[in-house]
Amino acid sequence: MSNYVESFGQLWGPLLVLGQIALFTLVLLLSIAFLLLLDRKVWAGVMMRKGPNVVGPFGLLQSFADFGKFLIKEIVIPAGANKTVFILAPILTCTLAFASWSAIPVAPGTTSGTSWVISNLNVGILYLFAISSLGVYGIIMGGWASNSKYPFLGALRSAAQMVSYEVSIGFVIVTVILQVGSMNLTDIVNNQDGGFWNWHAFSFQNFPLIIVMFPMFVIFFISALAETNRPPFDLPEAESELVAGYQVEYGSTPYLLFMLGEYLNIVLMCAMMTILFLGGWHGPIPLGEDFVRDHPFLNAFAGLFWFMFKILFFFFLFAMVKAIVPRYRYDQLMRLGWKVFLPTSLAAVLIVAGYVVYMGVQS
Amino acid sequence: MAVYAFYLIALVVLVSALSVIMARNPVHSVLWLILAFFSSAGLLVLIGAEFLAMLLVVVYVGAVAVLFLFVVMMLDVDFVELKQGTLRYWPFAVLVGVIFAAEIVLATVFGTSTNASTFDASPGAATNTEAIGQVMYTQYLLLFQMAGIILLVAMIGAIVLTLRHRPETKRQNIAKQTSRRRSDAVELKDPTPGQGI
Image (cartoon, rainbow over all chains, first blue to last red; front, side, top):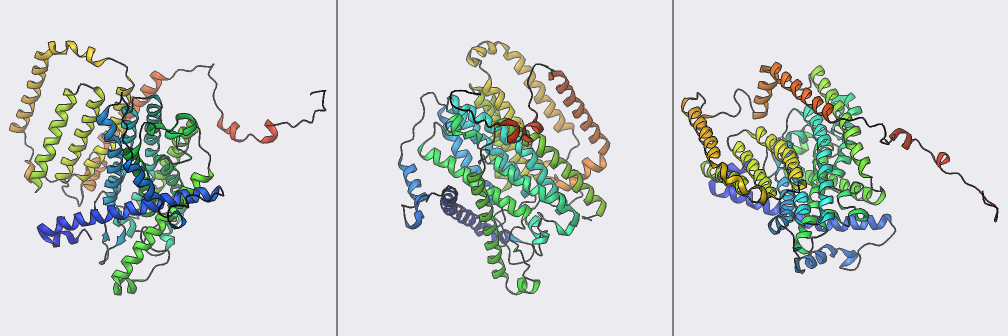
């Protein structure tokens, strides 16, 4: 839809962009409220508990009650804290988490080759990578500004962890970029058109690459867990060792912002996996060119449905992993990142690059 | 529009760069430095060099500045005390500043580079990424590889300088740990009462 912006002229173009941003923000906030509940329900289900079930039918309004409670609590700033940085840290986390969504294409456009995205960047995937690599600052700043031992230790752990896993995420992204020949997210999704066998996780269009790409998909998933500080890699907030890591001194609205940023990042990682490996908005069975040409709007809504469905699928996996897998030890975490994932993904980049050059996949 | 955006971002770069040297707290200095890096990336986006802008953010803000912040946070130095005598050195600061300013002026007056309004961020290619790829991996491949080898040598040198073999440290053998079975570790006994094992 962003290609329409120019046609709307000087005044309406920017207003349309603002409207899209407002829509994205609203939808994201609402979905985070229910995804949080889903997370807790899945966790409870695995433990044979009921989970939140008091506020509203099936506890559906639990997140809104929590939201209200966080908002009306008093903001407590520790006496020795660095006030500006202390307040800035959660705001930064939340802002960056929202900012990355401006490049995510969520549905196919009504003309072929386009998509519904706020900003169709040529280097979209690099933008996402750059913004998510900034996420570490919110945590370091929060941990340092609290002027307290546990938050600082949590912040240091988290910084080391996120920097380590970014390396393997970067290499996995490179394998996908090599196959597509473009860093534009819309191009990456459109490269996976025509049935689930063409999704990059399976890569049937470059057949033997399934041996490389499926493991890369798994590595990306595990690295995404580590990058978002989710269990089993939630060492920055390991409650048995560090109370709650960088969040110890936070309460009320700043804590709410931290939590919101964390969940937005999780959903962002789910969206990135959907776009990079599971074909974005493409359904598992192709609808056919005639259908797409005759019913562009129906096609767009079907695309939106599949995109959201895949994100939900990944979020469910995140929740299940949290419930099932025990926490890693810190040295095991570092070993996995540097000694297992890094060499594997580097080898995969070499193999895919060799295949692309040898077979002449891109002209 | 783009001109106003340029002036706004350039102002942010200047203010944050000034704050890097003015801030009393070194951690604040690094945070201002990060803002300066980030705004410079914004300037690169404005001239159409998207790829360079993203690389600047990924490499400098996402990795290098994190290490800066790490080191500065871990230092336990009283910086107020350290900074007390620094005002004595102002003539040197002025000298260095004048030299830098003169160099910039000379470069802009006598330089042959194109001026910013006719600047092309992706000459001879569709995108900035392609243009840089052509230059780095095709035109100057040899120099690029040499730079890579120099970096590799530096890396190996750093490892050689800091690596110490200490035979008394206990190391973990991951293969041994994971191949351990219950039967190797646990032995079930059924002692009769009053006798022990």
